[in-house]
Image (cartoon, rainbow over all chains, first blue to last red):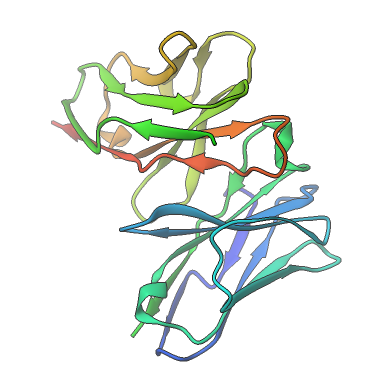
Amino acid sequence: DSGVTQTPKHLITATGQRVTLRCSPRSGDLSVYWYQQSLDQGLQFLIQYYNGEERAKGNILERFSAQQFPDLHSELNLSSLELGDSALYFCASSPRDFRGGYGYTFGSGTRLTVV
Amino acid sequence: AQSVTQLDSHVSVSEGTPVLLRCNYSSSYSPSLFWYVQHPNKGLQLLLKYTSAATLVKGINGFEAEFKKSETSFHLTKPSAHMSDAAEYFCVVIVLNSGNTPLVFGKGTRLSVIA
């Protein structure tokens, strides 16, 4: 157990629907990062939050949004889902901003299947 | 911009023989480099990290990597492969002091270990 908890582990939903993925960071970590892993794109950085504030943004679609709550857990919201959104979504956390270079701790991911 | 190139998408070795997974990086600044491993249906686990200290870095499970600035390489090695090493391996770069840049992943190398 890495200490980063992601729920649910698996999610199957239909096109056009909206889902929410949840991530609880490792105790004491302030930063949360979201990554999407697909066969064709590999691991793509989506977004980072640090202590409740958006800190960095990557290749995140406008249909996707995220937030980090006061208890530091984070949610990734995916709406108007398309077949191409099917992927493994990882959350990672780190003690502070990534510039510490200490590496991240990853959760085990949420596998999203859009049918 | 910083990037990493994993030179082999798939490496196959026999159990007990050496492992070499190759990674070249591109960075305008002094990089921090990592290797992560992903076992099937699992999250990403940090194997080792280089953050400008010793150029030969030892990680978990007998893996090590050597940072070679002149060759811009950070190859991962292990003297003797074990069946449990079969997994996907990712070379990752992060650039310190460069602003809001997250971890940048290579496309991964799938390691197969043959009995």
